[in-house]
Image (cartoon, rainbow, N blue to C red; front, side):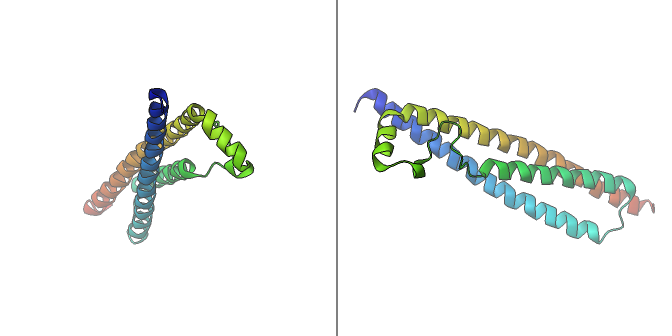
Length: 151
């Protein structure tokens, strides 16, 4: 096995590991967003909210739902074979062997593009989660402040 082949195999393994790591982070963030949405709904349902708290909290919830959408988009299976991936299920054993033998570099390229797309969705979702969380905190402060001031 040549040095180039070893490097391609290492790059292939590295990209696959990055995809796995990104998918694991996404799963954790989806669980977190679900818990925050459920908790916010439970708390907000039982409190007398003032208008500014409703606006801030509503905006925060909308951002969290948008973040969940991005996270789901990131882990959605790609069954149409885009981004350079052959549909392995449609190939014969000989075609798979030929594709693997000559297209490892193309597979690394396709996997890398997939990893970047997943990472981009994850990064955008984290930004939305942070902003949505800040708005929920603002809503809680507005509610507590309104209750303290008797409004």
